[in-house]
Length: 336
Image (cartoon, rainbow, N blue to C red; front, side, top):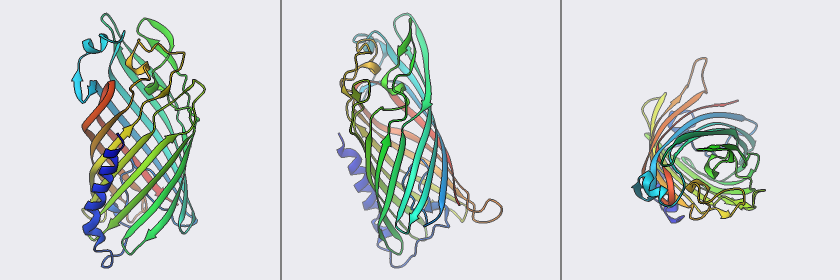
């Protein structure tokens, strides 16, 4: 399951080879709109020693319809196995990332977010919208530079997630009131996780190419006696500089996750596929398209904006799951 994200990263590095070959001919510049990775990626930028960088990101993800494997199914198929079927979902995330340059080759960052989720479910007679919101888990990452050439940079990522977010949010499920909501509606994981990764980027006079591989490995069960599946995410991106202000970005993004481990006693596994911990793994490949804006001068000098849309081109699930439809994100970054 985790092989495809790694293949995406390898493909991105191969695509970067023509730029890398020019490493001796071109010297890296941060003062360009394509020098910044899309803001939906965290842990891509080393911060100069003694500097602080603040990033705010808002994202909206829309899910619609149900899939099993890679095939689209209807609610009737789901209701053959479960009492109810999800058919639509929306996630909104407010994210703040604070990064500090602790040394010439060392950056420390803290990543916190607030999640606001809604999910529509139906049975043969009714449908209802459930909602949940709250602070999610907090991530802490150390970025360690391992190579810095004239136009190419590589750093390692060593991080952890602290289980700050709630895992026991409650709401209404059809005719039932005040029930524990499905796993995907919970703001947090409840588990301590380690987050290793690697990031590489290279640049020439036309643009910048980057690739990141990052894993999220769950170490502990939460207080409801389960842990979410491990994740691997791979991103390859390219930024084409239009001028000193604007750059177009695109690439490929792959996410793969394993099944939930453990079976909490406070859910009814036959009520909703979102409450069934068995066969909850899956994978998705997205194609993003975005625009970076860099303010090189004036009163807003140093401010950066990043906007991005993403659409799934492949998704595959081990059990019935609301399918990804599209996503949008907008971010702001400023170094002080």
